[in-house]
Length: 138
Image 1 (cartoon, one colour):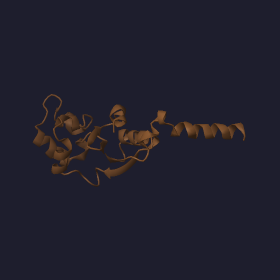
Image 2 (cartoon, rainbow, N blue to C red; image 1 turned 90 degrees about the vertical axis):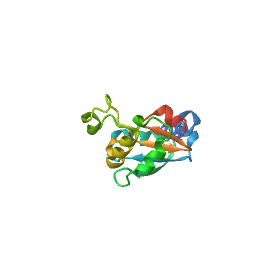
Image 3 (tube, one colour; image 1 turned 180 degrees about the horizontal axis):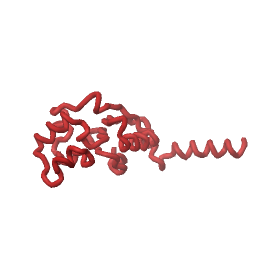
Image 4 (tube, rainbow, N blue to C red; image 1 turned 45 degrees about the horizontal axis):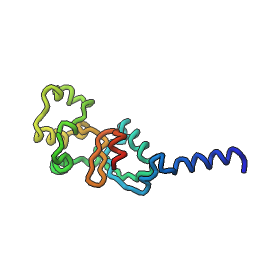
């Protein structure tokens, strides 16, 4: 076997080792995203590189209803689900004057760009944004 083939084989073996996160291989998680979102693309690549299978939901094409958002947020602080990079968030100065839970849910249902994304769901856990530590726990 030539040295170059040995290196390629070694890289493949290294990629499949548990130390690189492949221990999650075969696991499927829901991945709520917007395809043009760079944070979503980076999180997607990170997870796929670790062998995590993703079940996609495009938030532009298949918006979350208010009832779905209510269930998703659960007992968590609703402000964590607000996308601080969104123009509406900044224009309404939501950092200084956060909306009520009901108002935030209504706005996120109407404007999916206001949802912090991606939203990753697995085994009852919810991970927002590209949170490597959160992803490691799913």
